[in-house]
Image 1 (cartoon, rainbow, N blue to C red):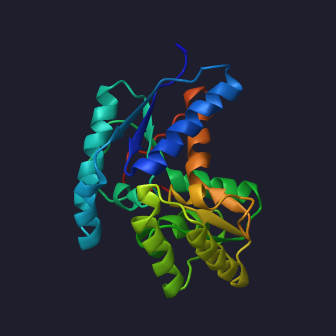
Image 2 (tube, one colour; image 1 turned 180 degrees about the vertical axis):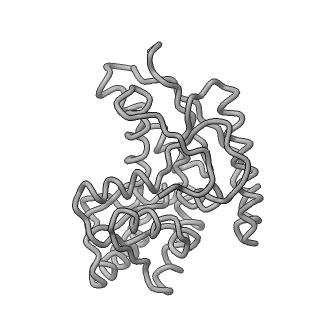
Length: 245
């Protein structure tokens, strides 16, 4: 493992961070052998510290909290970080002091995969902050891909289920059916894929039940991070702030 890079997982919600951690480690078991994976450290500041700032729209305050986590990962010896929380990237992309270690931007990984798979219009399924924010439309448009968010009622349904159920580890058949209906509406709007860009959604909506092909942001980013850690992918250079075109 001496030639492998140390990954830091900058967590923001527990369920999604756990899936990211598990995916990264299991990639090692598959590709490196039993019990093997590059070093990985996970840091999680309670989401309760950030939620009041999300609700008030003070994303700079969220950025500062996330930077605390990044500093702790750097102090633990991490070479680079991923944040499996899509909404957090609204704060990451703000102008501000550079982060103490480079990060692999989740939307860039998802948009890159969408282009590789030949998708032309991608539905965005995540928190209301993500569905209504600029992160994914920008990343997809930079690769010539159109995007669409659910209608207002569907956005409300998706967001409520995320914060009342998914982040608390609650996954029900009724909510799965509700998400399937939202994805069906995105398909009717011309989408040929759906980006599952809240880290917990892939735990509820799997590829075999989705009406559209899925882009699982959590697992895609974790596997890309594994490639970085093992040298199969270049080290990222982004340290927060606006993403260069």
